[in-house]
Structure formats: C-alpha cells, structure tokens
Image (spheres, rainbow, N blue to C red):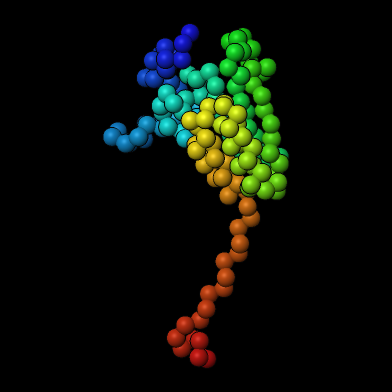
Length: 141
C-alpha cells in the first residue's frame, strides 16, 4: 500500500490526533512524529522511513524504521541505537545529523536536530537560583 493511500486513510480517523483548539494547529502524539504536527511529512505511521527520537533512562534513543521491511516484521524492521547521557551535545547532534547526511530522510534534519537539542536541554541539571539581594532600607541595615 502506498504512503499516500495510508495517509488518506489515517488523516481523519486516527487515535493519535489531538485537537485542542478548533481553529489552531492539529497535533499528533504518534511515535516517529518529530514535530508532533498532524501532517503527512512528519507522520510516523504513513511514511516508510521514519526517525523516532525519545528520552530513555540510559540516554537519547534514536529508532529508525527500515524502508523495505515487510508489514509482518515489527521488531526486525527497526534499528535502535542509544546516545549515552553525558556524551555531549555535539556528539548527539552529530549522530542525528549524520542520518540526514547519509540520505535517510534529509527533509527531517532540522526537526531531528530540534528534538535532540530539546532532549539534551532537559537532561542538564538546572543551576540553583541566586539568593535575592536586599533592596531599600534592608540593604542599608
């Protein structure tokens, strides 16, 4: 079945669709959707090649769907690799950018880099807020 036909079938009747605002953008929670937008380009269900980037306890997990796998293959149709925590942002972004450089969905390069950098930012420890400085009469006392 072609990806266009799959999208036509999934477009209106999909359990992953999130319609919060009637006139706003339509979001999607499906796996493999890097921008969480309900569109054919970013759909993880309707495309043969998908990139799924998510957070795991051991690091950032990148899953790639093989394009020529049969529908009966579920586990063997995906390749998963993990970028360890504390391995550095440049390494993580280099791994994700390398996928696009090798020709695997180069149109999703910006979305994949954005998702990866957002996950790296959430893994960093937050700095404690500095103590408040006394102002006015309290500062002179």
